[in-house]
Every structure is written in structure tokens, then in C-alpha cells.
Image (cartoon, rainbow, N blue to C red):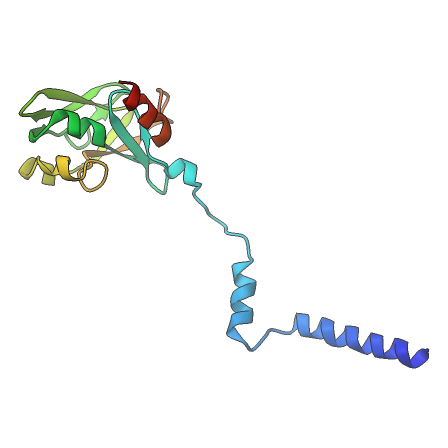
Length: 170
């Protein structure tokens, strides 16, 4: 009986010593670091693209202080071939619901409304040279402006699923 308990005690000592000692194998080191909690994260919900009833979209940057603004794919198709885009000026103070520019097509013209308050930090100057790019990729490379926000968006914003349902009803 005494020999069995000494074997168990020796096994525990070896096991505990192996846990304390760093492993020479890289995969063991990786497994330990992969299980450590992340110190900074951005939730998927905060990075999710949101839509307005006026057919604009906004998307928060990783820092949550700057939003990218553009028109939705639905709006680009409804406008037809875009021939001119009036962009806002950089450093322009804007309020929620303000018209910050316009999009003109062969069919019609439409104001660009901002769903957030803040300051225009950057505009997509490539659209001045090639306004038709907005028809090719309105929710990607053809963004219109980046706005540094002064507060959280307070207006009615929809998720992609809610916006799709909204446009199907129209």
C-alpha cells in the first residue's frame, strides 16, 4: 500500500513540474497564447453596415470614431447612370439629417443626407473624376465621405436584413 501511494505522489510531482516548465515545442506555446483573453476587441455589431430610409449606408471604423458614408446599391440602381457627384468639403461641420452633397444621374438627382453629426474628415475625390464608379461598387470603393462623429447615431438605422425588407416593400 505504501509503495502505491509513493508512485501516485511521484506521478503528481512529475505532472505538476511539467505544467510549470515551459514546453520546448512551438505548438504548445501557441496553444497557451491562443487561449489568453484578447485585450482589445471590436464587436461585429459595431462594424456592421447600417442603412437609412433615405438609402444611405454608414459603417463604423475600427476605432468607432469615424464613419464611412455612401449610397446603397438599391439607390445606385434606382438612379441609373450617375453623371455627377457633389462631394462635401473636408472639415465641414454636419448635423444629423443635413444634406452634405448630391448625386445626379441621367434620370434624376438626389441629395446625400448624413445620419450622423460630426466633421467631414475625408471625401472620395476619385468620384469627382469618375462619378460612374458609384454604379459599379456603391457599397465598397465608391464611398462618399468619412465623418468623425461627435456622438452616437440617433436616427433610425437598419441592419442589412431590415433594409432589404424595407426596399422590397417599396
